[in-house]
Length: 446
Image (cartoon, rainbow, N blue to C red; front, top):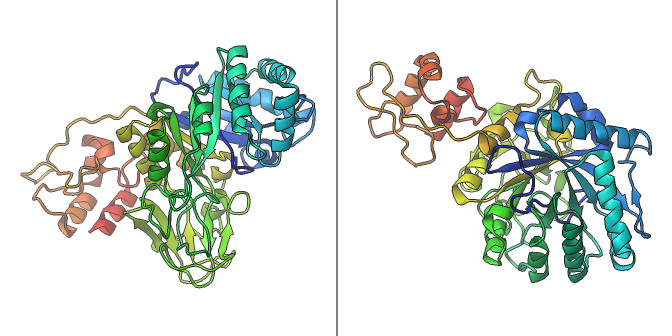
């Protein structure tokens, strides 16, 4: 994954008991176990958990230490599977990762039957429902297709997921060979997060870690564009998922926001280095006074008056609003769901609500949309209006305009709205509840 640049998956109809049409598959990796104790996982924000990772040996055998050791690694994997099933979620084993490609190639080319048997045996012995095929380097797509087909035949009742790369619209196209591989998987999730989505120098402007929209020549990658290209190439929408990184990136060199010219090596942070737990945690750079929203990319960012600990003033990250926007996009466009890399990096232990990001994922992707009618607020003759059709009712007094009067009304009737109106209609922050932050978000829209 981001130990990374490969494929992850969920083919239609294999063992999804989540009760939702959309998936949230979160990666939990052994080397980050201290960042998120298993008992602290917020299962309500997940449909599937992918445990990372088992890796291939060239002879077709498997390494199952999960980046810990041969005893405690499998024990942790069994614990994760047991917890997942106790919460009615599916557990998947991540196979591979960056740097394991040569061994996977050898195992598939020279020992395929034994390799597949070992994968199936390991899934069963550790109590897992499926496998994530993260073959990222030394990839041979015709061989990969054969491997996926034979694995599907050997494990017809198992979930198979596959991660794939984002598409740079300036020069990349969808490889038909990858489309062929997706025929045998249940989820095909794009790794639409840095370093696939942002670059410094070579004509790139400053951009986002997981941009939903806004691809253009100077920022040629977005979730919307990459998903559309795979779908146009033959991958069904219901099998396609996006990717969200639970870490931040920043830009040095005086860059203060998105869409500014960049120079080489000006991106800092990223996976492992800048987890969202660091950004949002005690002493982190997050400060809502300097938080802005890009309505084109549908992403938040920080534009700080002074550099953070990485030397960056412009920081791209995820928050409740962006996660809900991504869920709304999946629902409204008929896509399958999302992967999260990694769950561990998004647990903010120092907050009173350490799983607030998972709560937003639940609201955006999993909870059935509930749309009871809005009603007129006390003292108003008009019913609230959603002027831009995004499901959020900015015109609270129903007078056909969005002004400071609506903000004042929201402030005065906050408790009444929380008790009497449908929460999603006024949940500007996307965190599943009505509070002062929603008033601030409305004010910033004016």
